[in-house]
Amino acid sequence: MSITTTPHLNFHGQARAALEFYGTVFGGEATVTTYGDLGMPKDVPGADGVVFGQVETAEGFRVMAYDIPGGTEEPAGAVGSTRRENGTTITTQPFFVSVRGESFDEVEAYWKKLSDGASVVEPLAASAWSAGFGMLTDRFGVTWSLDVAPARAAGARGGSAEQPPAAVAPSRDRATAAPPPVRPGTPGRTDSIRSRTGGETMRHVPDSERRARLAVRHALAPAHRVSGPEDAARAVVALHATDAPSVHLAVWARTRDTTPGDVDRALYEDRALVKQLAMRRTLFTFPRDLLPAALSSAAARVATAERARLIRDFERAGAAPDAAAWLEQAREDVEAALARSPSALSTAQLRKAVAHIDTVVPGRSGEQWSAPQILTLLGAQGSLVRGPSTGRFPTARPLWTLPSRWLGGPVAAMEPAEGYREIVRRWLHAFGPGTEDDLVWWLGATRATVRTALAELGAVEVSLDGLASGWLLPDDLDPVPDAGPWTALLPPLDPTVMGWKHRGFYLGPHHGALFDTRGNAGTTAWVNGRIVGCWVQDADATVRVRLLEPVSDEERTSLEARAALLTTWLAGSRSPTGYRSPAMRAHAPDDSHVIREHVLPEGKPQ
Image 1: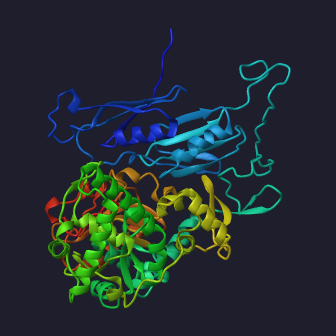
Image 2: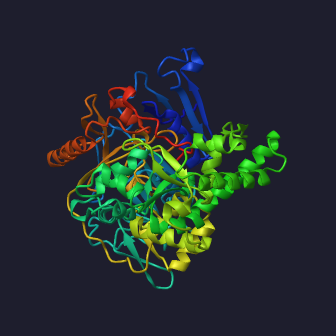
Image 3: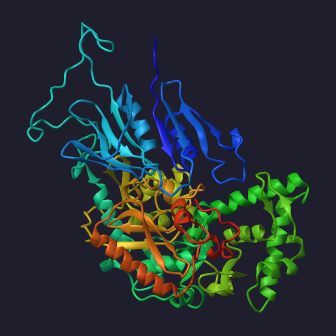
């Protein structure tokens, strides 16, 4: 007789995403049956919820999950919390999921994947009873305990009578006990330096300092806010611009006394900020002096990939026997039309002026090529630029123009490696320390490109809590002191929220509540470098904070004060976003107030 015990996790609409994530961490594929599969009408809310789901691997991992019927009022994992104090686990959660491996390398591999978007409770490191032990609360609110199987007594399975494994004696006084051995490169040390092979030392940057750096470098702590829109963009390298109101709201969060008109002036009169499709095929607002670097590197990579896709799809559909020549002619004709026009032109106007771009060609992935996508590609190449807008906050209806007209001359040329190096330099200053994975994801570049830029900059390797090594600029190794108490309300797709791939040190267990299924962040509410909730607007356009975890009375008061300031600043503009997270949707009063017309055609930030 034998029995099998399997963790069964209960979610509020997140079971499928959780199972798919665990499949990527431990291997195996998610098996899912929905309420709709069992007969619930497809148009009934919750029909796509998981009634039975599991992930199982040949190595012995198995977990089950389902979605509790009845809505998503409470994000998964909202009940209870876990922390470590003086070597003791303090928790109000009813259970943990324990995973045990045979070696540190095996456990570390799971840890690195599981920690994406997680809140680390205890960094993975050697302990008195194991060669590796760590705890974290994952992006879905589930707390995991990972460890390496301890050595067994002589004669037991896994050991031998002739050469028994070494015993580890517990100490009554951890303060006087010798520290456990730690391999070079093992994540999780919390001291100020880390040993390198060869006797050198590695600086350690704990999560607390990363949050302090975020507060200072991103101009979010009150004492470190900046004076205007251009400085706000520089603080985070560039501002996300796919969701047009987010540019203005991101500037508001980082500046003193800046109005929506000030942001419009920087964009459309001073032209100190320029919108450009670049990293990850996402629209950003760059400080003007960074545009040459962006065009030569990330934008060029996007343009090359999009051009190859267009040529493939056009030729496959028989729309142009020589699609490369067709696209070149389209570029020349669009540039000529803009040169003839005394003012910038809309997509509709260019479609009429250049008749042969007014076409529809199906793409292999289900999307289609038409005039907006062709103009977007030409913009990524730098042939066109988004210039004046016929709308003002909270909408944006940009017109196309020539870079030479809008910027007063051609954009300076740079070599791709030089462009990447400059963008990586600015990212390290603003977001460092970050991992190689963070940079590869944020840039949408290859690992080789990132490693080359880090080497050319002389970037210094540092250790981080619970993660692989991170990187800092060589002149930026001094500790950054705590910025003091602060709160912030950030818009959807804010650069701070979207700046890293590994977000555990500021996001905690709230990924599922604050990001949509495409990986886009909604609004966020911050306390001292950590996300604690989101914000929405009531039907009367009043900003309200919605918490996902407890905060102190003082912190709540500060958040409410920021909400009141934002309500005044918005001056009646209601729900100015097309990107809303599950937490926002759970608290939004009415879908009818969502402003969607400003979402640009490319609109797929990751």
